[in-house]
Image (cartoon, rainbow over all chains, first blue to last red):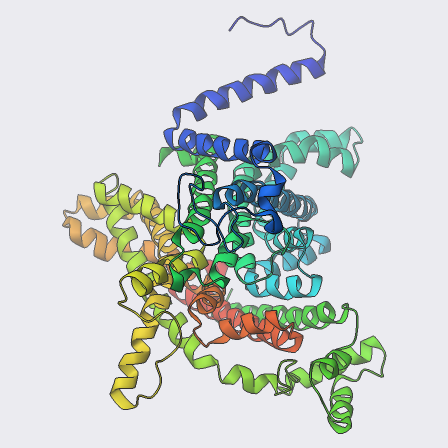
Length: 304
Length: 321
């Protein structure tokens, strides 16, 4: 790469050039990680299915009253994965499920990250004060409590809608992020550039947004990817327990529907097995991507 | 810090956590529309006297802070209210379901931790071997599996197609003595295998990475330099030190195993606390859910305390932190 004339650039452009270069460097490292690349390709496939889903599968295919197939028919040429109790194509349900499950996974993770980062940064930035003590106790409480039982209690109170499922997952899964962020914020706070910013008169808000947040981000990035995997698993568990949104077709809800329709005793394997395999593939690929990112962004691990 | 102060601090922390659980439990279920007695009366036909008695036990005519104090007193006395499903005391409902869950969670924890530690040790010690890579990927796949679905899969194959095990339930019925024990054990196999497979992966991964860390320590090098045979380096030096973090994880993940038991019991109709939870969800039986949240949290808090105290005893360094 040719040397860039740094003297004539504005500080902002300089920063962006630096960031772009760092990103390109990370991507080059990531591409060498075969596990990470396998995970990323599986993920891309499912993301495409989720995004293009409404184009591939017409809404009428998902409407129980407009189903055309014979209920409970095993895989055939017209229905590659058979049909469900209404005679809907299981393949069409799977495509719709990709959209809902990934939507829940991502939005719940965004919620969890928002809570976790806010609590973690506040606790770390005010480390040692009473604010830190209270937030730390709160974080520990959420870490100790059996998450599923808390999720069940919250979900039964809030009622079964997709938004509530997302909220419940976010509330029960932010604590480990907060702990990670707090530890990182505690060390960043002691750096000289923070002291310099303080000496120049920067307020809490400015220090947090321009100095703490960017330095905390790499730590939670890999954690974010792993949280998406956990959120999708959580949605499945809540759905199987009957706490999912009855009107939304997620992979977990397909499993629940097949279970409640007696798929196990009647042997409707084509209805039960595919959604589970989809969940395993997606969570596995998120986990693989997360591990690869962890290796790149937290290089101390790389020697292992 | 002295050992006694360390234990005392941990006990205080546990008590505070439990207090938070009680408080959350009260306010979470009080923000709902409608008061608990109206809901109980709607779902169950109760006579005037029973309703009045319940009303008094909740203190619903008083302001919220007083209700809260009332609730604390009642709970500490072991009064958990009446179930919305059948108007029986929640306490009796739960007591009848404890034993199956203890069996399931107990055996599941013992099996998954024993197998996980063995697999993780063997893999980590021979890092990069075929055993290591295959078990590592196996652990990752198991970790990515929704437990409920894994249980259904096992049931489909081993109960439905092969017919080796019964498809759920606690016992066939009409048996006594030794035959009954065998029958119950037969019903327990698939739920136990599901629960074990659900947690063996994470234990193996933690044991492996903790062993890899210990293997870089100076004392392992010293042992090797002294000419200690490979097998003994593992058994006497690396193994015990690597086991410490895994040991805490096993205790700390008790809450997760309980969660797993809820879903496994639901799938296999295993009549424990988990199935009770499922039934309570389906009937919107709030007092039962409240009580289960309280009791399982208390159990988990006690286990955490036990883990902290034993860990402090096994590894005196953490007492300083």
